[in-house]
Length: 189
Image 1 (tube, rainbow, N blue to C red):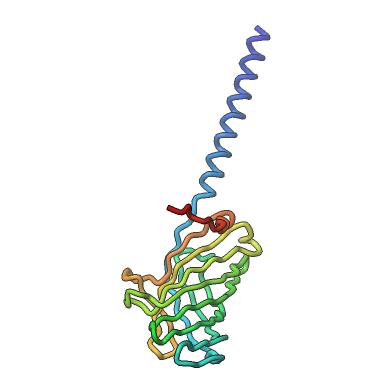
Image 2 (image 1 turned 90 degrees about the vertical axis):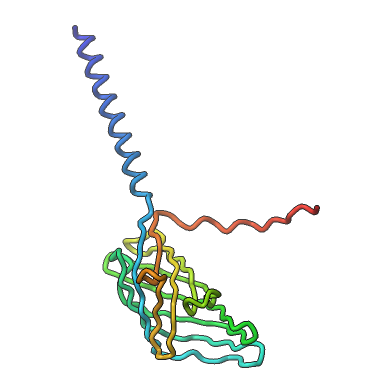
């Protein structure tokens, strides 16, 4: 009888441990599911860019500073921040290629963002940018990636719309972006 009680107790303990390990696995899988984020951004130019080159082929602007307000579906990526942008405009193409940085900080953590983009070839918006933002502080270990469409009416206010009332679509996820793959040479035909 004592052996039966020990076996029963051992089985119960193993079952509980097994159940806890399944719960831990389920919890970690749930925690790694990305959070979808949508919202809007409105920026106001507070310092115009400096033109460092202005030829018939290219106009290079550096250091435009904007104050931006993001109103997002997730409070971790909502707030006010300063954005710095550089761009090269090619008149013959009617296209600009842009890069920039911004840091969005909140009480528990922040996001250290770098972004790049181009003019919108569809003409629906002025441009489209893609940003990668590693988390800092309390958001360390998370990454926020987003795409943003923007319009500039020339008034100094910059906003945009995907057509559904939002100008930003992104994800917050655990970990880092996958590494950029090494270039490969295609075999000759």
